[in-house]
Image (cartoon, rainbow, N blue to C red; front, side, top):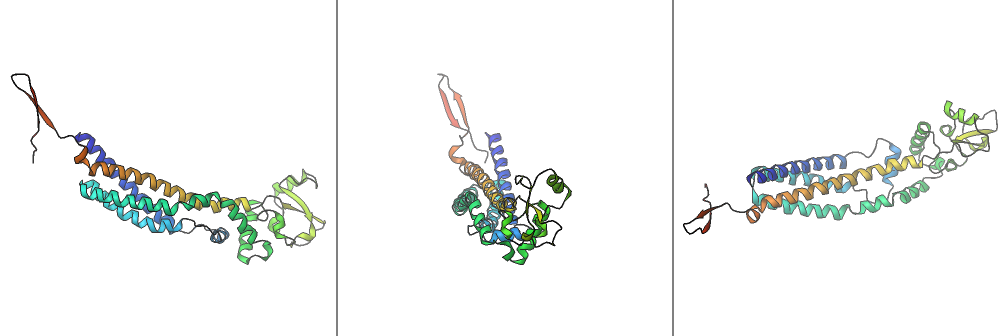
Length: 275
């Protein structure tokens, strides 16, 4: 029994340390920037739904404080403090679950909300200059054009939409002008703001940049859901272990000794305490 109790105490100490680590992670993610990409940050700010950032910023410090209390209670075997810690961390657990529950709905509605944000910033040639600049960088690096399609630029296609690199030109040479299923498609020269070409046809990327931006936008939500899920799992384990240790007097069987008299009658008596 003593070995089992020592094992439970060590396990409770490890779980409360993990709870402390999760609180530090919540603080770090909650007060860090979303992404170094200005375009991603700007589009993310336009999402109307809650992104769970406030949950991490508020409950992160609370988790750190309570986990320190739990570590002290578990290491020193302070049963009243273990029970207090269990009650407080359970209250925080319920509050986090209630406040963070809209995140699941946000994740489910992310695609429709992002499409609405994309619609609000089109046509792209009328968008804010810094949005155009960042989008042009993304188009040049990922060989895409527009948010939903290259027509988002209307008749002001930038140079970054053109198929100019070697791999794109090789694909163009292997396809006909009527083939619109490849990575590039031919358009009239008048649809671009680039310098006039010798021919009246230009090749632009058919792949939209929207799916790429959606993956960037959904990553912070998925990360916060993952952190909150890990916090919930660790919290439930900490509550169970601390309650077991705090209520030890109610479940632990007191040691007894048996004696047999001359008539073979067995007598059970509690062993005397060392204290």
